[in-house]
Length: 259
Image (cartoon, rainbow, N blue to C red):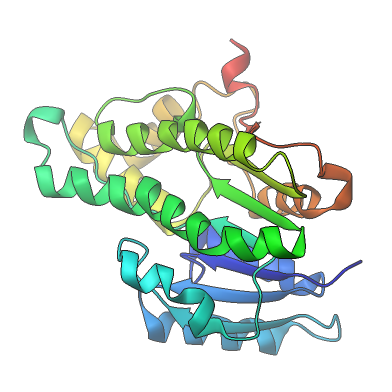
């Protein structure tokens, strides 16, 4: 196994931290990137402490993925660390009817989850080309391929990632760089916990009713997607065996879209 340097946005918690932990356990070096510098440093320290004897390691960097100047300076900030794998994971959610959706919040979601991945890919793609290796993995969502009410900005941003990935795949056909989008159904993270509470309030339901009647109802398997499933899929996409898988939508949905 070749040790890779993996840059994960929003890596201090939730899906990002879960994937980071799996990467470190496989011997890779993970750069935890987060808008909250203290949270990133604490997450990196925990990963380094828990890595055991697998040879993995972690470091931290503060970055606002919406700030084009900060993002473009990342290769310089990282110095000798050349990013092999970019995982575009940072995300937020806002649940509201469109009529009540604040315009600045709508823009913020698009900036974090669509513009941010484009800026980061733009920043790291030159070095990936130069070394003739790169893996770009977008963390999309089941909402990259289907919609739910009250999530117009989130659904729009996650759908946009698919078109972005297809375009970059065409532009990188001349080198060993791939870009793909993981599209899981619901993963039990703090972000999803917040969605459960918000939807319960919006629909006058209990939280258990939101889980069973809204979130898991479309899934034949009736299960949340695990962090291990996501991480293992990402690890496969990083491998040489996945060098011709690019521009693809990797759906982990318990059969949701089979209907």
